[in-house]
Amino acid sequence: MQVLSQAEAVPGQFWQWRSQPIYYVQAGERRADRPPLLLIHGFGASTDHWRKNVAGLSHEFEVWAIDLVGFGRSAKPEWQYSGDVWRDQLHGFITEVIGRPAILAGNSLGGYAALCVGAQRPDSVAGVVLINSAGPFTDIQGTTKPDPLRAVMGNIVRTLFQQDWASFLLFQYVRQKSVIRKTLEKVYLDQSAITPQLIEDIYRPSCDPGAPKVFASVFRTPQGEKVDVLLHQLTAPLLMLWGEADPWINARERGAKFRHYHPQLTEYYLQAGHCPHDEVPEQVNELIRSWVLSLA
Image 1 (tube, helix red, strand yellow):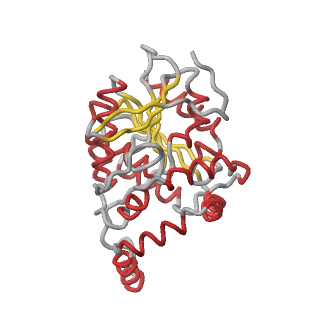
Image 2 (cartoon, rainbow, N blue to C red; image 1 turned 60 degrees about the horizontal axis):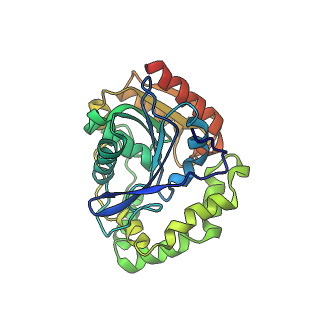
């Protein structure tokens, strides 16, 4: 079995899906007594973001990590990107490459994609792990006060960035290494985890020719299925991991929403920001390990 350090990236390979090359990595040996793990990155990230987790978990599990189409080293075709596209990509990968149901662990956007697979392609999934997961809930009438100004400004911004020139200019701004660093400094509690390697791993895919169009699709693609609907459909075991210092979401409030719609979940709150798997990998690896083994 290949033994990895946290600093090493596993050599990857490509799988063809819908005539597009999809990048993935694999480490660890197949175990008859436990399911494989499939790690799914967030927006703008890639398999590189799971380096510490692949290294830490591959001693006891067969571990896979994949670049969603549009990100990392995977192809970036001019498609309409959505949870449905990534759901079908992940389902196809599990079916054709992994060959048996997997535990899907996803961060942020990757969490939403993992939930889509777990809810709508249940034959592929042995369990779901959501780490500061993204995705919209259905707005419940009467629970929040409407903010007309915010609604108007939101519509203006969405309309503006549906223009090619505006989304391209914004993309050119946010892909600068200095801006990537400032963004990471906001969403990471442990600043020492923000390394030049991490910044390079995020910057590098932004240089690919199709990257601006993928970025633009965020403002143009209708929102996918609501999280509460997906949670009602989900039958696989669910583990929720939350970095409490995430400035983008109120972890406790959002966690309560997940628990309301899916009371049988297991959850843990960690001293970390938006990406606990990269900030506190030992804690995340152990929580995933013990939870997966408890399912056997």
